[in-house]
Length: 443
Image 1: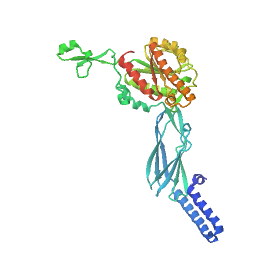
Image 2: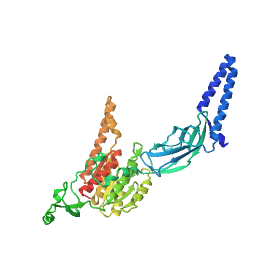
Image 3: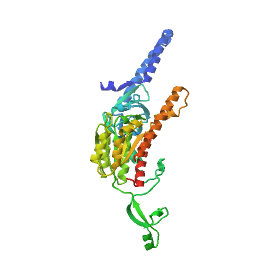
Image 4: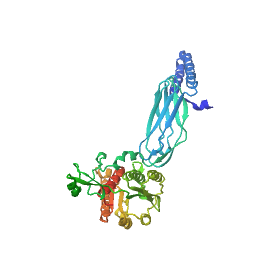
């Protein structure tokens, strides 16, 4: 029974069989070829038996293993490697059908390779998950054919392999250097104009070219008889909280990911930068209530705690209650902190409903509201219009884009900082804003 389940007839066998059937039909017209056709049938059966012997005489003719990361990174390309080992003494054709998790909805996954005798080969493919959670791989099916190509023998490996998908930890390595420099030009972002610095004194040192002339210490210069400057460092141990709105406004998808997942990925990377800058990073999410709370600290285990909390954020995308957010911040965050709020406002009416609570938070804390441009509207705005309906669509799209800029200006009137960003640029823009606030010393 096991033998029958693992044996598959290849297309080549059916092509040959179809040719023989065609010859039998011709034999009715040309009786002289009838015996020759039967001889062809015997040859086919002989080669079929030989093909079975070649593939089944060796018990472990082929081995394969699927190597996956310990966890997948949400929204990024994750490498999946397959290690193939051919133990046969002849070259084989291999068809690989990997049962990848149902979340990817891939129905036609197939890789075809050729391995020489006793060859080992490693191949790979990439998967890009778009939601957090557990991803179960099914069977790794390997169909091996000999040079005769009449049948395939199926080998099965690696059933029920589970890999969790976490927020985009791959971006942590990509943006790690931003924690040590305010120069973002190598990432395509403008260099921050340093308006001032915090007054946390570090040391007096000799002047070198490039030092700020305004920091010259004239008393030390006179005593040393050489130019001396005061050196300052960014103030450390400041509390920074990321507040993630997980209400219905964050349900909108862009490039497969929801705005909520973009915010979660950005929070993970920004938390790493904050901790590398010796500040305290914390977070919480809110919708109908405030939850997933991590208090701002800078312990060694803080990043792991933040990663696990972000992984477990779940929502039904209810209407967000900003009054609960205001009360919770007033109750639980006593020290003046930087609060980076990830949310989305589409209209001025939507902002005006929540503005009293935002102003209340901004009285005691430095509030930065991060919200999103609807990049899908760009295709409508840039499209050449030919009909009246297309003109109407373009005007409405431009109105929505303009209203986003009005929202940013309205927040600015009340001393609330804002970041209007495209989803794909969210992480860089959030880091840039945090470093700008540090450089200006306004927290």
